[in-house]
Amino acid sequence: ELKVEQNPLFLSMQEGKNYTIYCNYSTTSDRLYWYRQDPGKSLESLFVLLSNGAVKQEGRLMASLDTKARLSTLHITAAVHDLSATYFCAASYSGAGSYQLTFGKGTKLSVIP
Amino acid sequence: GAVVSQHPSWVICKSGTSVKIECRSLDFQATTMFWYRQFPKQSLMLMATSNEGSKATYEQGVEKDKFLINHASLTLSTLTVTSAHPEDSSFYICSARGNPHRRAAYEQYFGPGTRLTVT
Image 1 (spheres, rainbow over the protein chains, first blue to last red):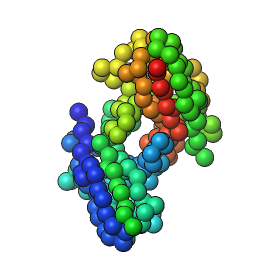
Image 2 (tube, rainbow over the protein chains, first blue to last red):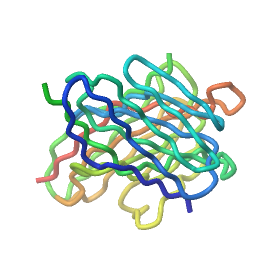
Image 3 (cartoon, helix red, strand yellow):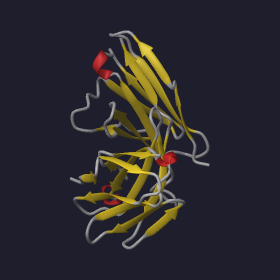
Image 4 (cartoon, rainbow over the protein chains, first blue to last red):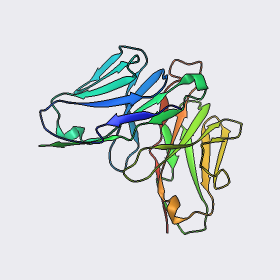
């Protein structure tokens, strides 16, 4: 059974600082996803990581994947208030045929001016 | 492209009544649709996976007789919460996956969610 753990679950950071959210998964996964969720809203897709060593960047967010360590990271550079949201990672394994996603518990990020 | 809609966006119903939530893929054919439930301050929990034209596969602990899922076409799946109770109050989110032969087959596209409140 695929399990996904995120940490930290809560993150309060000052504007301008850098920080990393970690996502570990328990068994073989061939895709790792990062999503953002604002309060009362659905999920917004940020990144899909498909292979070992994959790195993707969009603005102040950068995601990476290490399949050997079963670890993905979401790095936040020079945080701004607009980044305040809950971030979820999710993993899937296509071998099951259904592409089901298993989500982490989410990291609630608060960026303080 | 790859837009998924849900209707209604919010609904309030009385205990004991049934509520139907629609999930539509607007610009692509969704061979598989997923239904999730999210309680406040919690993560998304997969309820069921539905493939067009076949019965839905429910996750352990999800009552199939209470949460009826119909995936009648490649663009529409419905979730009916039967005999709703206050504990069914939650945020219900659907997602859709496209044709597995297309490049973005692994992508799931999420609907905007439906907030259900049962009084």
